[in-house]
Length: 233
Image (cartoon, rainbow, N blue to C red; front, side, top):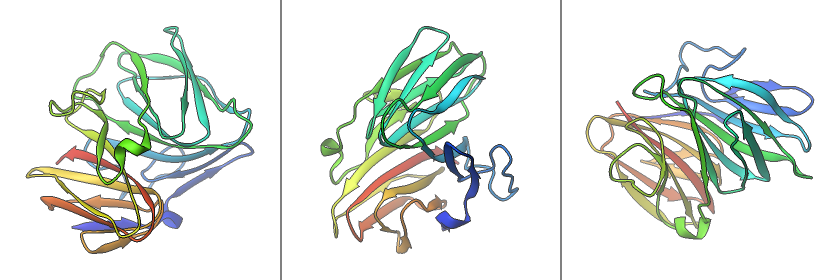
């Protein structure tokens, strides 16, 4: 089954520096029908104004994956980690038993990103932070594991769950297939472009829940950048 939630139907939060859309219930946005897909609990679509960001705050018992779509985000935490993640690259934070961090857009332009929260398999893990470059040229016509806790993805940033975030790019008319296999489900977002997902047309930044499908087939209607979460059912 392919269930599409249109971008304009997503939850919304906006102030003078943050324009956010929530794929699932988050903060002041609550929809009992939109509480996540398996261990995927949060998928936020954020636009952060230049010179602003999230002051020091805490998290625990969550795998937090940040995919930067444009601009860059600068991370700093109480463990001494600090780094700048640019467009197309990924950072992962295991909040574990507790971490304090801040994230700021230190750029002269707006930064846009997806922030994805996945519940780990176990609680009270040792907190950690990591980042990696993932050149878009390496993702042309295929889905590349970006963050994963699955044994078949040793080169991805590690998360503590039997799940994976994969990214790919497609040119207009290009297609690909991805085998989910039994007892799996997926959530898909086209960061740019529009695609046909198992026969259903999906526009930019719509959310797509995929259940009961052994294979996901994508065809790009124009140049597209895809993120897919492969999740346990």
